[in-house]
Each structure stands twice: as structure tokens, then as C-alpha cells.
Length: 276
Image (cartoon, rainbow, N blue to C red; front, side, top):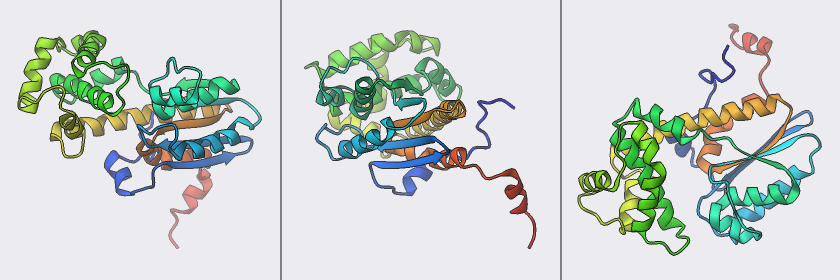
């Protein structure tokens, strides 16, 4: 069997997870023997003063005291974070907080996510490539307006992302230059300005165009399967893990992670199928 095959693993879909209406932040701690798996599902775009970071800090303090090998897993966005906790959170949110803790305490850090150069072709197999490329930019622009850093204008940020993603967009058959974007944006937005914060919030929400909702759901499933595969591999090597992701990922992965840490013995599985 392919060790990366997750077809039999119970990972919730995006809508299934949302329907559970779990609190945010959403966290849980699982253990088996001398290993512990701590999952912190955060609310995005919160300042360092938010109470969720008090909870995160207490869970981290528990984690760092564990014996044996330890690794912290974070959502994409690892990079320079500065020396102050507040700066780390301002730059990379909850992932920056975890990175700051890990660097301070000498605990290894890993991004468990699938890379965009692998993700985009898989999405382009199911959706129009132009929609996939535009969806990537909607997400980046929404992030910019939620966490504006560096004093750059929306137009400057958009152009920087077009440059950043150009080769990846080209790989799925999209020009990915500003001329392409202007045409696509006019078609989708009806002529909205790139400075229109409310438009970017709308187009990335459950109220936005159905095609982008479908892409988000597909992307979430691909990412969750990849994350689970990485966690499963590291857990199998005997590591304790501190996993920081958005709360929706924590909820969707919970059934699979609980089964991973405390699997039902095969004999019990067979017995539960016997008629009474």
C-alpha cells in the first residue's frame, strides 16, 4: 500500500467541518505512550494581544517540556519574523507565533503544506486554469487588506504577486501578466477597482462566485490530505508534534488524527461488524 494513500482516512470536507460550528480558536491534545500531538486551530489575522495567543503559549509550554523528538508544524508563511513576538505575529500570524516559539526554544519547524507548484496543476485538472490563477490572486489580495504591511498600495501588491506567480501560472497555460489580469478581473468583478477591499472580501467568501467556492473546497481537500500524510509520517517516526493551522483545518483533520493516535485494533473492528 502507498504510505501516502489517504483514501480510507476520515477527513472532513470544508462544509462538513464548518457545519460543526466549533469554537475558534479550536485546539486539542492527543497522546499515545510518550508521544503527544497538539493541534492549535487558530483564528487568522489576530493581533499579538488576542487571547488566543495566551492559550497557544500555554499549550506550547506544555509541548516544549515533553521528552523525545519534537517538531512544530506551521501553515505556509515561514520566513523572517524579527526578534519580538509582536512582530512575528504581525508578519505571519499564528504561524509566526509558532515559529517564534520554536526558534526561541530550539525546536525544529516544518511547513507541512503542499507547494503551489504542485497544487495548481492539480486544481487546473478540474477547473479552468484562468479561474485557478485568478483565485490565487483573490486570496493574496484579501490577505493584503486584512494584514496591510509595508505601506504598499493594492496595485503594487497585485503586481508583485503577478511577478511571483508568473512561472506557475505559465505552467498551467495562463499568461499571468497584468494585461491578462485586467481582462480577467473586469470579467469577474464587473469593473471593480483593485483598491476595493469589500470586493476581495466578497469574492473569497461563501457568497462569492460558485467556481471559486468549488476551487476552495477542492484546494482544502488536497491540502488536508497532504498535511495528514506529513503528520502520519512524523508520528510514525516517534516525534511529538505541535501543529498550528487555521481552525477549519484543525476541525477537518480531527477524526483522522484521533484515529492515527489511538487506532481501533483490527480485531475490535472485526468484532464490531458481527451481528448481535
